[in-house]
Length: 416
Image (cartoon, rainbow, N blue to C red):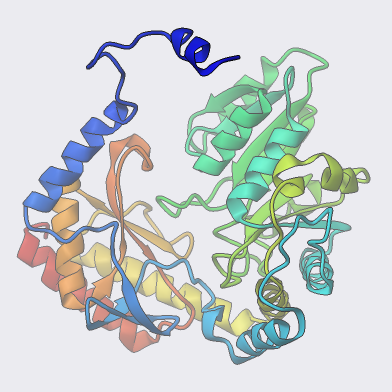
């Protein structure tokens, strides 16, 4: 075909008629512009120039306490973890340059999966390149067209994206509402495939799911159960296996999904299961098959960290102490929190609106404290939150300093 014919076949587009594909973001662009024009620092562009420890970093040239990193067990600077990563770099190089089903499975990947099987006392474990990919891959593969997914309305974006990718019928229910979940389950057509998806700890408010009741009802109604334990692994439960363990239902959960980017202290995701057919997922799960595997240094640090978390009861106890103290201290000052009592390592401080929230975030940073500013649509009920995630390496003195910083910033902004 000649060039002239190709050109003549193209539809004519008049100048100004083409749609700007970025128009859909205009409201967000304007919101960000107005926020920055008020004089606050950009909450979503913070740069850590140097990380000093699990609890401190240099931000904007200042020594800053970190209270928004999800580094719950403080494993990012553990000497054994760092040494394992350095050794893997020397022995295996910087990356795999391939998928797990091709050239991307190194000895470290198998050792990491073995550590997960031991940690959870389960038969099968799959490691993904991120926690997001773990949810995307497992959910979209096991629940497809004609199947039904019953899930909490406040589920993480990666869960919703996994549902969309798999084309299953999605039936949401009100957050942590056991009765609403049961009603949805009973409406599912008889004989249909059913998957109930829950989270142990919900990351915005830091509240815990009533898994004991929910898992029981799911099983009574013939559903499989998937629980995302990203924000409870390593910390909650006698052995750190999460809310499933704490609630005594871990053996009734068909799939447990988690991430290495929280308590484990690196990057990656995983799924563990006792299902006898689970291993076929390695051949049919697209986000596993078509993604390059994690670098050798990452799986080495993850495996070492997971094994150390098996014997971390003292760190878990200290983290609970930190959570209880921060929650009580902020409550006494008059801040409105996401939960009536400490339920996890996440303490959510509810702000009156986005403008006040951004001002409070900026004031805290000026005090030398970093927290997460969370806003709609990521947050439930259109709330603006300052999300604090405590670390087992925060000292008691640091927690008291954090409370003083909140008091100073809260009074300066006019929130308390």
